[in-house]
Amino acid sequence: MAGTSPARTARLFLSIAILASPACADEAFVTAQGADALSIVDLSTMKTVATLPIGGKPAGVAVSRDGARVFVTSPEGKFLTVIDAPARKIERRIPVEGGPLGVAASPDGRRVYVADLYGRRLVEIDLEKGAAQRSVGVGAMASGVAVAPDGRTIVVADRDDNALSLIDAATFARLAIVPVGRHPFGVAIDASGARAYSANVESDDLSVIDLAERKLVATLKCGSRPYTVALANGRIFVANQHGDSLSIFDAKTLAPLETLKVGEYPEGLAASGDGARIYVANWFSNELWALDAQTLQILGKAETGDGPRAFGAFFRGTN
Image: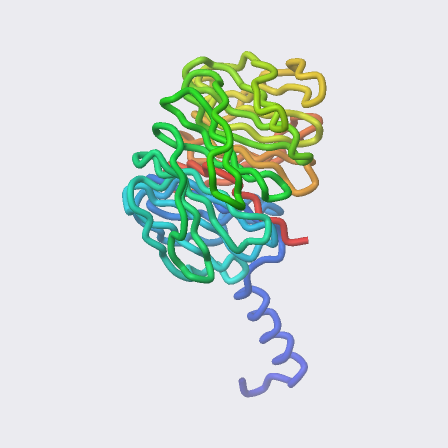
């Protein structure tokens, strides 16, 4: 760099380093099934900043609590992809027979739980050993998976049995079967670990389950084909695929608050770490929307890869 001062050269190299490094903003890791890839969205700018090739028609996604890793299921590839989230690089792929779909991580990030859509089982993967270690029988067409905040209970949606399986994480035994609406798919557990929720695709409703009592306590009417559920700012958000909308309820009283139009065929839902925002992956319009969880105003839209499913906890906080 002839003719360039040392100070200017230092500033130039610093600028290049900043541009080449992964962003420090909160991110969304969105499985784009049609593109066979993972879209990484910078949530401060609502721009896709990286795309990772995954393969096997990726669908399920989970971010570890510490944000260090992201786990992606590929139902057609029969594997789980482990991603170094800060580096935005694939670490490895772990074989999972059957149809790996729903996925969730233990609070300590050492184990990953994968629902086998075709094998009527939940699989536990020990990340230190890099292979499936235990499995437990659940219902037919196991779909969504959620882990209680204390890590002791795992909830699995048994789609074709119209029920939820409650699993003891320590013994990996099936504790209870709780009947819910028709074809439960997405599931969530509140921050206190008191209640679980299932979005029931065919009965157009949301089931509310008391985890201590292991029973259904309420059924809330939603829009057409509710698919996933997330909680933010004292509210329950349900994505209605055929309604192109979100059904919104008060989490305490369970009263309906609003039906909000979003993009085409919404699927994945996730809340920001502080609960101030809700993110919606719209499968047919290839967009991720950011909404204010209180005012319900649209804060931004990001283009993603083709067919964003984002089925699971896809938000990664960096603060």
